[in-house]
Image (cartoon, rainbow, N blue to C red):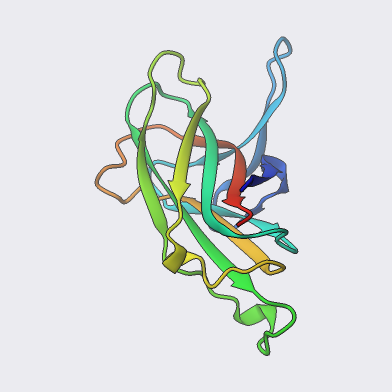
Amino acid sequence: MATRRVVFEVDGAQSTSGVDFPIFALDGTTATIPYYQFSSTVTQGVQFTIPQVQEYGANPSAVILWNSDVNSGSAVWGCQLAAYDPNSGTDGLSSLAFDTITSGVFEHSGGNASRAMTATLSIDVAETDGLTNGDYLVISIQRINAHASDTLTGFAQLLGLSFEYSDT
């Protein structure tokens, strides 16, 4: 059994609900870091696509690389999957619908506000929208600011995403 990993650069996402388009942090002295900025007052999201999932077995998870502009509080991140079998699906991609959201509360680790952290969401098999090998997959990542446990008063900044699963 091996873990398969699809890594997405943040500038490859599509904005879905008012999230600021990729911001490139520039101060002239440090590296340019692209990120999507999620508000503390509005639920926002982005989507990533995998045109054809390869060697899918089970146990999917979304590993979110993130930071913030404040150094305390918790962000609630969510992930939804929408899978489509291009070989047997009779409906078009326009009818693609997301399965149940998987969410988790992730506390800022403290120290420097821009410290990079990971948030891992293990996706229950019942919430994979019937994902199988070869499917077209859309992954939606959201900050759920309306959740009572989201106490991060500043922006949560998405730096990247890794979609991981076993091949058996």
